[in-house]
Every structure is written in structure tokens, then in C-alpha cells.
Length: 359
Image 1 (cartoon, rainbow, N blue to C red):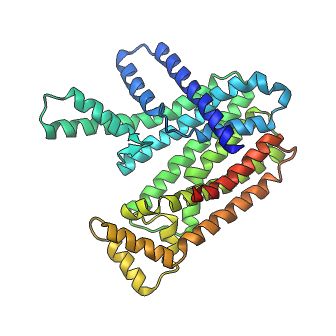
Image 2: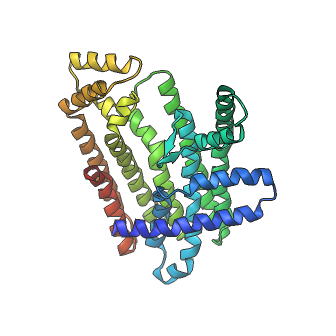
Image 3: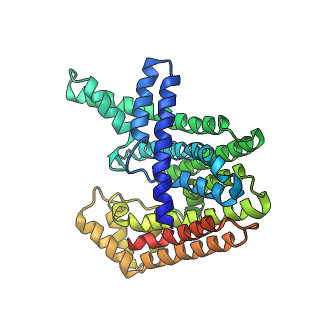
């Protein structure tokens, strides 16, 4: 069920993305800005993009709308679902820039994509000067590209065919999501820059602001546009997605544990848990590895073995499983209930959050 739905919607959303950029190209009068649009389009149209957030928006809409009207509104809601994809894209651009990541979805990150484009135009320059100028170009344009992506999302909702009142409600939730994302990124960067290791409570708060909020707002916007009941349908669905989103963040950390050890990222769930479960000698080993320059395969293996010895990966999985259970319980509070297929989808999606650890 979940695989079929996500695969089908991913294909449809990719088609909508291409249509949207075709229209954007036609509307843009500036040749110079069109060049930016082409680079932005190249980044967004990626075969490895999951399109998970717009799929959640569509699932919430399909789950609440009267089935009689679903076929008539299917095209409209798919167009609106692009808004949450552009919100997610804006966050990815900024996050990659902050971390100076080079690869996203098996392709260059946006600022590195722009850097490579500029390097091709600066072939006559010396290698050092060319690289520096190209990097600054990629960095500066990406600083503007993130907010631009957020604004596109607002425009998509504003220009949709839904009732004005519903669009205003949806835009309100979209701007809240943007605010929470930025707030979460600022707090996370503050902690990282000041070398402050998060507590479990701080971790869950940031997981809610950055990951879970986008899950929650995606489904909330879909439910609002389907004219869902605020108290009996939308609020329980929102509560469920916040818990599931937190669980998804934890399982992401479990999946990426070796990569995070290598990059010495202390504000990941396994490391935070380990601090409360390790012996004095293990603590000494962690401090030595995390505070020295660079990391070897041996270092990664040593830390990973400590995580295994202290059962933090198992504990993290159990923590995520508990959050999923809380999310599924919130789904049971929705009344009138979601349409059956979508109720099954959200329950399966909740389970998938943890089951993907076995893939």
C-alpha cells in the first residue's frame, strides 16, 4: 500500500514540478534571472528526490475530502503539494550551505552546482582565483536561493483554485513551518558553534522544529484544503505527525550513524544517548576521538563498537518505536475518521519510520 502510493504520487509530483518550471520559464522576463531559474530547476528536478512531503499533503487531503469531490480536486491538490516541496528544498539549500556539504541526492548540492557552473565560465583564470570566485558565487546565490524557494511555495498556495479563506489558513501554516525551520536551524547552529552537546529534550525539540514540523504542516495544509474539522480531525492528525516526525529523525540518525561518527557530529541521538550510558574509559575514548583532527576507519569502528556495547542503537530504536506508537494512538483520535485507504497509509507510514532500519 505505502510503496504503491508513494511511487504513484512521486511520479505525478515530478510531472507537476516540470510543468511548474515550464510556466515559470514563460513568465520570467529577465534573461539573467532565467539562468538562475534553470540552475534551480536542475537542482529540484532530481530522480533521487523522494517527494515525501508533498505525498503526505496529498494523503491528508485524500483522507478527509468527501470522496465524491476527490477526482475533481486531484489536479488542484497536486499543484498545491509543490508548495511543501519548495519549503523542503529551501531548507535543504540552507542546510547544505551551513554544513558545506558537497553531495545531495547523489548530485552536487545547490551551492556546489553553482560553483561548478561558474568554474566553467572562468576557464581563463588561475585555478586558485577561479575556485575562490566560483565558491563565493555559489555561496551567495544559495543564500538567496533558499528564501526564494520559500516564497515560491507561498505563491503556489496563493494562486491555487481553492477558496480564499482556505488558502489564507494554508498560508498561515506554511509561514509557521518556515519560521519553525529557521528557528530550529538557528538553535542547532548555535549549539554546534558553541560546542554544546544537546540534552535529549533539546534534541527532540529541534527534531520537532526541523523535521517533524514539515511533516505536520504538510498534512495540516492538505487537511485544511479538504475542509477538515480543526478540533476533531486536523489537531489529532497534527499531533500524530509530530511524533512520527521525531521518530523519523531518530531513525535517520541510526541509519547515518557511521557517517555522523566520521564527521564528528555530537548532536545526533546515538551520541547523546551514549553520554548517559558509557564507562569512564569509553568516555575517555570518545573525547579523544571527537576532539582530534580528522578521523580514521579505526576511530569510526571504535566509536561504533562503543555504541554497540552500550546498546544505544537498540535504545534509540526503542525510543523511536515508542514515539511511533504515540503517533498511531493520535491517529485513532481522528473523528470523523480518515477515508480507509488513507488511514491505512498513515498507519503504514508510521510503521515504515522504524521498519526502514531493516532495509
